[in-house]
Image 1 (spheres, helix red, strand yellow):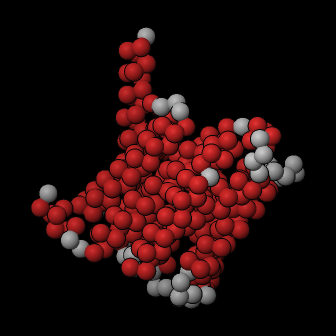
Image 2 (cartoon, helix red, strand yellow; image 1 turned 60 degrees about the vertical axis):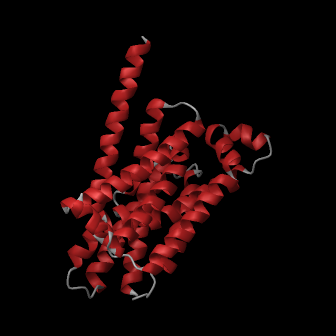
Image 3 (tube, one colour; image 1 turned 90 degrees about the vertical axis):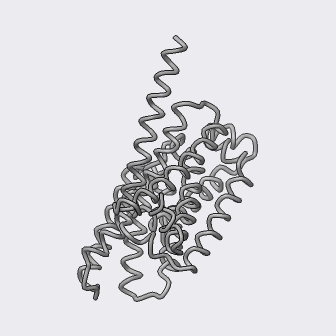
Length: 280
């Protein structure tokens, strides 16, 4: 405990906790919608796209790669959604083509043009979020805070429409909801979350932040609101615990957070099974 208190006095640890909580909260809010709509795989695809965009930004020596990575990821999110509605290219095939292509091209470009002396370390940090969460600047923290507030505000403002589109697009369309526009909004917000989460868990583990809290909450609750609230609370707690364990134990931040999410999911499964046995 004394060691933990001493670590919490360092600004980089405080920044990591603030960003970790905000990213976990944003990921969990729309994670329930993605899981119910069976779009959870879009997070994995967009994370690979973000990696490719980040590689290009690094080669171009951009002072703020977020200005390049964010628009590219948002555009690809919209393209993935459009491609998924194409009869010739199924949604899963479009995801595979764009995500694997972006990952391969990004790594190839890094090998060909990167001037870094530790290329493997840079790639590992980007893919798994090894140390980037502990090297955040004040500018990056404020950017994360502003974008997180924007994501939460959009979710609350369009909650009823997101709820309608999640469960029945035909009924939502009949009731006057612009389903296509709502889906595009969801895709764009997810792209923003993906780019933010790369600093926390890396591009290969982002889907875990989206899927595990939502799946855990669904073990115990049935209503959309209850699942969303539980998912958000669980995601925040797992992120906090994962970051603290990582700092104390010296383990990779992203992998530790995902391990805590997995443990929480297993605990929720056991609780759900016990509740089912008691009802019987």
